[in-house]
Every structure is written in structure tokens, then in C-alpha cells.
Image (cartoon, rainbow, N blue to C red; front, side, top):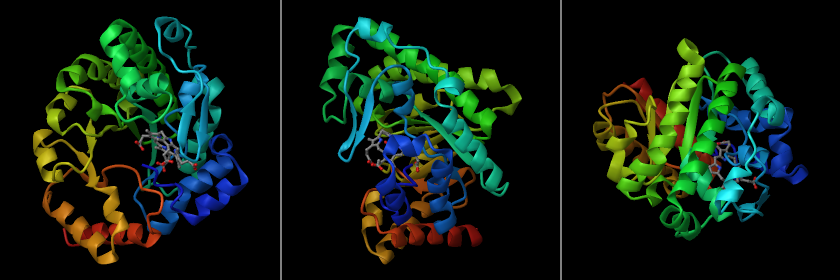
Length: 324
Ligand code: CP3
């Protein structure tokens, strides 16, 4: 998650020349920045360079990327705006992400898979309604309380659009597909169950149905969901990427021992090399001896993270792998 990003000098150099969206639309540069962390740190997987908000744009929601984060100039706040959303045709509207995946799959060795991704319906809906990063999500929550059926329509529109998008990414060469539900934790347990979860299930069941036996592992990243990890098991995902609120081993237990990914606090990488190594060992100790664990952060790499701390994290994980 933002494995490629502004903490890396190579990425910064590319971004001095091209805008964020132009970078997404250039498979040569997109592949280059996706590969930088893999080549530099020896990650076991590459994540294709794009953004979860790109499909919103294809549906007619204008998105701009500024230094302070993305901004949607015309928000989706009522039933008319939801009904005006266009259908999304990934091959026609975002062919470049498929081409970037194809390029990555072609140049990476076979033991380094490419990860494709999309935003989870609830998190996309939050951006579409709010327009920008917001603390209390008052606009999205107002819709939830005043017009819950409109919110449901929006969620299911986004879910339906995400099925062909992820399917196309797998067909282009992605060997894992991840949904990012960054705003899951803004919902109560009941609202997660009533709004976010049914839409997630549409996506995962739909992708699995489309791809059949060729379906790669489906991963759900969910932030702030420690209070309802058991509900995530009903999403249809194969593996669960979690934040740092619980020790990784506790999260794995609550998820019935299913494969988990995570969960170092990204701010741990702002510490010293020693503190990074210590925190990484603590994380690994909580799942010692267990199968189905992908060592990762619990959210994206933060701007200002010293690259050498990312290297220390990877090194510590690899050492643990060597000793069992
Ligand atoms: O290495 C990778 O992970 C590649 C691609 C990737 C980006 N964004 C690139 C990006 C992925 C997987 C994402 C996911 C994403 N984008 C999420 C879900 C995960 C999460 O971080 O919570 C969300 C909510 C977004 C929306 C978004 N895009 C935000 C909130 C921001 C601003 C915050 C930030 O870190 O700058 C972006 C911009 C963005 N997306 C950048 C990158 C590298 C920085 C943009 C720049 O270069 O100016």
C-alpha cells in the first residue's frame, strides 16, 4: 500500500516531470515506479501503480490529485447524482492499468506476483460523497441516516463496477486482487453489516464467479475493524489485511486462522533502525510458527519514511523467514 510513493527518491523524480494521473496513464512510467520498491528492497510482490479513485473518474466523478490529497470537484450527494453515474468499462476507459499489469507480469520473475486492486465500495462511496479526506464523514453519514436507500444504490453501483475491473486486472496478469476498505472503521458494527458488507460480497462473489478456477487470492484490507473482524469472514475474501490495533496473532485467531496480512503501524518506520527491527520482531512473534501470514504494514508507507527503515523492516522479516 503506497509501497511506491513519495518517500522514494525515484518516485519523486518521476513526479517532478508528470502529474499523478498522467503517471497512472503511462504504463512505461507506472511499471517503473511499481518496480522501484521491489528492486530496491526485495519485496515479494509488486502492486500496480494506480489509485482507488481512478474508476470514479471513469464513472464521471471528476477527481483531482493535489499535494494535500485527492479532491472530487462535484460530489455525489443525492439520488440524481447516483443515477447519473456512468457504467465503467475498464478495457475502454482504463486500458493503461491493464497494460501496466501486463508489463509488470512480463518483466518480474515468476515468484514475484503482481497485485491488482480497487477501492472497497464503502471507501469509494465515502470519497464520492465527501469529496476529500474528512474527519467525521458528516456528508456520507448524513446520506446514511436521511437517505439510506440512496447510499445502498451508490454502494451497489460501485460494487457492480468493481467486478469487471478486478476481473480484467486478473486477466491482464494480476495474481492477487486486493480491495482497500480504508474507511471501514468509521462504521458501527451494525452499519458495517448492513451497508459495507453486502456490497463487498457482491464484489468478491462476482469476481470469483467471473474467473472460476483461474481466480487468484482475493484479499480484503480493512482499517479500524477490530470490533467486527468476525463479520469480515462473511465478505467472501480469502485473506485479510489488518491494521495495527490488535497483535497480528490475535487478529488471525478472530479470523478463524485464515491468511492474514499486516500489520506494523506505519509510524513505526519513522523510528530508528533498532526500533523498526524490534517492532517487526514483536509483530512476527505474535504469529510465530503459523502458516498464512504476509508481513506488511497496517496501512500505507507514510511520506517522510526513511527508505533505510523500509529496508530494515524487510531485512528483519527475511531473517525471521530463514530461521523458520
Ligand atoms: O504502491 C502502491 O501501493 C501503489 C498504488 C496506490 C496508491 N494509492 C498510489 C498513490 C494504492 C494501492 C493506493 C490506494 C489508495 N488511494 C487508498 C487505499 C489505501 C489507503 O492508503 O488507505 C486510498 C484511500 C487512496 C486515496 C488517496 N490517493 C489518498 C488518500 C491520497 C493522498 C494521501 C497520500 O499518501 O498522498 C492519494 C494519492 C496517492 N495515491 C499517492 C500515491 C503514491 C500520492 C500522490 C502523489 O504522488 O502526489
